[in-house]
Image 1 (cartoon, rainbow, N blue to C red):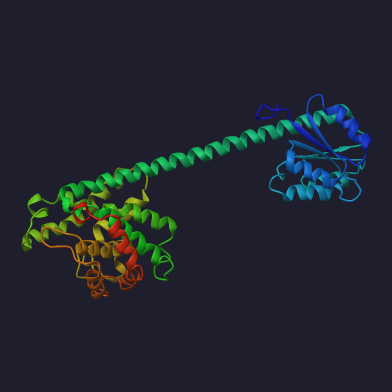
Image 2: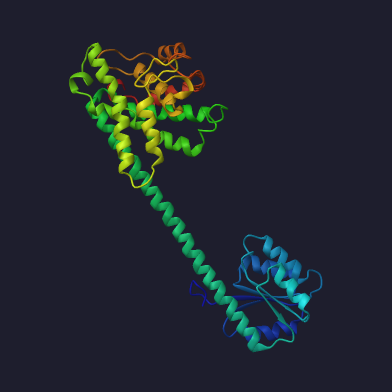
Length: 366
């Protein structure tokens, strides 16, 4: 029996009818046997029946055994079928050639039935073991993919849950995290081919960046309600406290990193974003007063995404701006508040930004 419980199938190929008859009589009691009298017919049968083993005569008119083997090996559907060469040539050179091209064994004529049966059984057992191993590996790969998918879902849900903690403290932000996540993805895709960004923005890093983006304001959970929810303008003292949310968020994520048993890539990006998304290109931002290329790319993208969304969103202290007005303000911040190339990417993808804003519009605005 094969690894799937079926009777093994064997294809015998020989241009001499008497040889096919001898082999068929020998093998048919235990195996399902197909027969072919030419290389061309053998290839057709092999492609359709996909036998477990092929006994292939070397010396045949037209297409010889080596040519048949070469075509079997070139076809992905048949390249894994083991082949035993059968030939009247019993020289060492002939056997070495057969084994060298990839045959699993070599049987010389005249056929000795016990030897043929023993070698056939050995090769079928080996193929059955390989098939079981392949099936197991396929299952393991599928299981790994399934579990990785589950882990990613759990991770994404956990990130969203943490991000919503900040939203609960500041309910006016509404779908802010969904919109900024979409904006960051648009910017990253737009910039992935740019010489200044290509080394940091491949498909994997963009995926991690998008996953990390919702945590940019997690530090707001540490800001007192009297300041976070104040309907009017903050005093200078209150503004200083509000600015600490960037550092508070970075510290919280850093603590999560330390608690993890291994490095978690998206947490490193989340920490960059949380701490740096209020930095400005000209160095006038907070908390560290970073400028230019020193600001992490992730934070530069979030800086623009965050400001654009704040401009077009309603707050207790202001009405929403039309996207076109927000676009103009972003352009005015090119080279001052924002990385010039990030602004250019925003302008190039402006319509897509507006579409994201419409897709995740806050309930009160819809």
